[in-house]
Image (cartoon, rainbow, N blue to C red):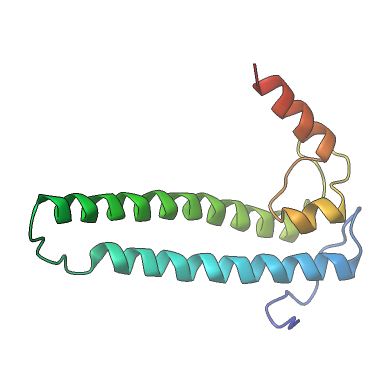
Length: 132
């Protein structure tokens, strides 16, 4: 794994080792680049010259395809925001701490969900109280 995009000195982290932080930072940077590429592709697909639809069925299909691309692009936009927030939290030395209780978000949880902002206990409680 290349560490070229990693700032020369990542802030100390209370919960993660330097090596763990470097790994997660690299993965977030890769995800950011991928999301930016996907966004560019979605814009290109949505703005390319529309083909002349032969009939109403073709028009409906084209419209449905565009709606699907738009929904996917919106999900990717939301994830892009979360990735940028996670990178900001790393730069500010806050990554790895639960936003609700301040306790550790484990390396395993962060590895599985790079943009996690809550420890597993707080996330479970949030989901439990949200569901009727």
